[in-house]
Each structure stands twice: as structure tokens, then as C-alpha cells.
Image (cartoon, rainbow over all chains, first blue to last red; front, side):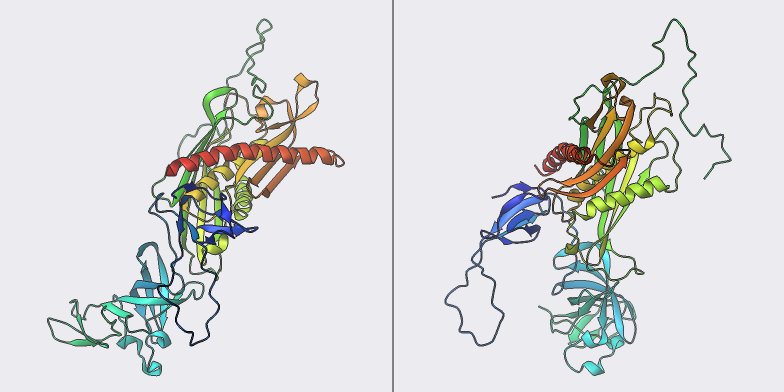
Length: 206
Length: 287
């Protein structure tokens, strides 16, 4: 089913579908909120019998309904996306201070952003352990490319980002001599030409 | 603003003096009276995606009254965003809408300045109110969208003199065009809306041909009528059956509630006509 909808077009009752991106609910009916192409995705069934519960989790939404969504993919590639809480983003360090590193978010998920959004990695969000010994200048330098996770929409100007995971941190760095360095440990990058190593919060390679 | 270094032309349109000739009375140009039915809008052309550099854009033309094929109203709308807010602004959990309406200097008979004048501000705030009811603002936290409507030609017949027709009524038609074109540009930009909002105008007119009996017409052209008593511009969501903006202007008896209601109802009707054009236009961009 690939049909075109315009904003305000009726898609179906909420008893039949779950709302996905590009839709909204009004009076128990689902309507499109974008100009785009309709997709209906069937819910994924958990393979095999469900695991015995060993922790308390919030009751999952009744997942037997298919999700209906409207995507702009067929219309234009210019769809702007915003960083959301939980997204993994790639960003460039703009400037550092003892309290925080200011970064420019370049890529959100798989999408290259049109606009440049500003983010902040505070000193307590750099790593998960020994938080009180973190020094920003031993973790990031201006110009580094950092993989980080969005933890909050933040204040008026900045998204708050965190690198407190093994896979998060600096993925590309240049040395003071201006050469691209390679990682040697979780907190060190080394310059291949001068052999000098510099401290960074290094992202674990996949 | 006044350009002293050049020899500027007169600020308004000039028409050559016409001397009354006893033998020939037909020289005095007079707009022919309205020929289309009272419940029909003029032919409208709408196209989206005209400005490649903008996130969304649309272009609208409305034909000139009594001259099929010649356009009277030309609007171009660009939508920029969603984009990050300036650093000075406060945190906003929803999208911040800012609308700018600007007349081109040559858009009307009276030449317009480059600075925004009160009419343009007024149109901008009406447009903002009309669109705010249609946008799902909380889908885009911490971002802003700029909607810029350029009026390239402002629905005025150059051949009528300045005394004929009143600018206040032209503004109504212009606003309804602005709403429709901005709605198309928003859909093109991919900003979440609950519905496609379109503008429509209805007016209570008095014509000498009808012995001065007032009647209600939609999409009025001021120069086609002898007198416009009142007019209202409606921004309407057809599937929701909601009005997001209502601009009522004119002179009407206080106690005549039925006429008020009828005028708004006809405005909705005009908006539904405009919405048909809108739906067809934005449907075509995907097909």
C-alpha cells in the first residue's frame, strides 16, 4: 500500500492502526500530518516463547496493531530532522572550557543535518566512571569528531550530549602537529609521525 | 527611503487626463460589473517547489477580474526551517512561527517602500494566527520556522484610477491568497499540520444595477462593485471544520446577526473552493 496523503487526510481508526511518524490522532481517528507516502508496517512478533520476567518493566503497549506512518521519502529528500533524546549523533568540537565542551552536531542517526545545531558535553557526562577526575582538555580538543548520545533537549541553545559509554567518544582526532592520529587505548591517541600521544576519551571501535 | 539622487517617477499610477466629450460618453473607463456567479471564485494557479534554496515554497496567481488569463494577484511564499533558534531566545518546547509579508515596491498602484509598513505587519500577524491553528507545533521543539510571503502583484487593476476601489478591501483578498500559498509551502516543507488551511473572502456588496439591494458575493473584486459594505476573510480547516482566523471589516447593523453568520458561512465556502485548488496542487507534486 503506497498511496499519497496530504495533511488532514483520514488514515483510519485508532482501533485498527498505531500512530507512527507523520500522523496525528484526532477524536479516535488517525490523520496524516504530512504530505507524503503511506507505509503500514506489521508489528514484529517476538521469536520463540517470551522470556520469564525477572524485572519490573512498564506494561508494553498492545503491539498487535500495525503501525501506520507517512514518510516524505518519495516526495523530497530535504526532510529536516531534529536530534531527539536517545539519538546517537556525530559532532565536531567547537571549543572547550574546564566545565564543558561545546560541539556542533553534524549528523543525527544516518541523516546529515542541514542546519547546524549546537550541543554541549558537560564534564560529568564525559565518561561513566571516575567522573570527578575528568578533565575536559584530556578528553576533547577543538576539531575532534565525536560520537555522542543526546541525553536532553537542554537549555535554549544547546542539546546536552553524553559520551558515557564505551562506543561513544572521539572517533577522529588531529594532533598538535596537525596529523590525523590513531587510537591506542581507551584514553590515548597517537600521532603516527611524531610518535607523541595525546589524551582523549576514545570511542571503542565497532 | 526617498531616493534623492535619481529622478524618480511619480509614486502612484498616473492616467492621462480624460476630457469629457459631449458626443462620446464611452471613453470613461469603468470596470465591467461582476460577470461570474456570486458563489464562484476567480481562476487560481498554484504551484509548489518553485524556490530550490528554501525548505518549501509555493507560487500563487489569481486571474484578474473581467480579463481572463491576466493575473491580478501574484504571490510567492518561501518557508525556511525548521532551523535552530537564535542564541538569545528562550527555550521553547514547540516550533516558533514567524511570518513576514512584504509587498514588492511595484506591487500596487501606490509605490511601496522597502521598509515594512503597518499594513504588511497587519497581514503578517493575521497570517501567523491562521497558520498557528494548523501547525502541530510540538513536533519540532527548540526550532523556528520563517514564512516569507512576497506580494509580487497586489490584485489591483492598473487601468482604474486611484480613487476607484479601496485598499482596505484589497487587503482581504491578499490575505486569503497569503494563507493559501503559505499552507502549500508548509506542506512542501514537510512541517506537520493538522489540515490544509486555505483562505476565503466573502463580502456584502451594494450595486446600483440591483437597485442598491445588498447581496453577498465570494471573492469580491472592489472595482467590480459600486460599494462594499462589509467583508470577511476566513482561514478554514475543511476536515476539522474549524476556523483558525477570522477578519471582519465594514459597516453593518448591529442587530443583523443572520447576515453576519451568512457572511462568515460564505467566507468558508470561498475557502473550500480555494482548498480544492490547494489539495490538487500538492497532490500533484508527489504523483
